[in-house]
Length: 306
Image (tube, rainbow, N blue to C red; front, side, top):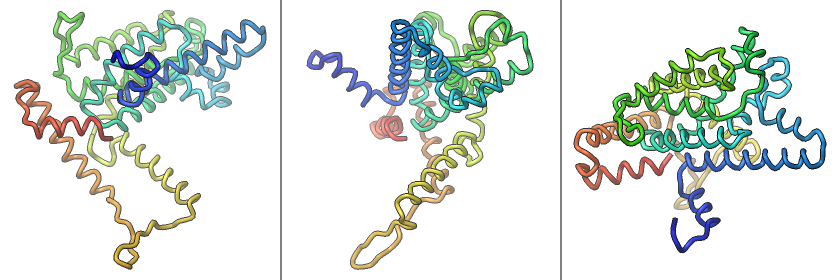
């Protein structure tokens, strides 16, 4: 941390310049603190505020209750009720998210986090409907970012399986083996009363693998959902702006602004991704210092655009 900045200044700087991963961590921490304040007020005033907190920030796996609170499929993936749960998840998110941002653009990270968490929550809902014993052994409330983080981690592992990490900074291990180990542990501990939403982890992992299929195609699940969301936003933006077409004047003439088609956008994105892959392969073989200045600049710009 710079000696010229206070702690608050450093937090502001990190939030503005730390990338999407840091912003997601900030959001999770902020939600955690907000939850703790509400719970503290509830204890002091002896009211039913604690029930509101639980109902708003937790996903209830009892389907009739869930359909009355559908928003919890989103709020639950940003919520933690204990400091250890938050700490472990944020450490895993920091590692997975930063590596994810080096390989993919920022918007893909956000969509993978949210959609992976949503699919994880739906897996838990389905599992509790099929296996009633889960309600007895594990309860019916699901909370935490684990499913979202598993989506990011498995997307990385299956996209770049040969990336090596060092456990405890000593033992080299390929990313794919670590991901398979986590998935196997979730499978063999299904139904164990350990307070962990294993089906949410598996749902997130499944989405992670799904999200990298046909990566540069318009049928890719992340690209498809992003396209739908962008079209909806454009529709409402045009609806409330009252302008059917954006026109600009140049040289006394009026002409319509030109936009890229989906095909042009996807082709450009595919070319950038292929170039990024080639540079990453070069790094894995010869190290970062083997890159030319142009290659380093390109990789840096890819990490800061999205």
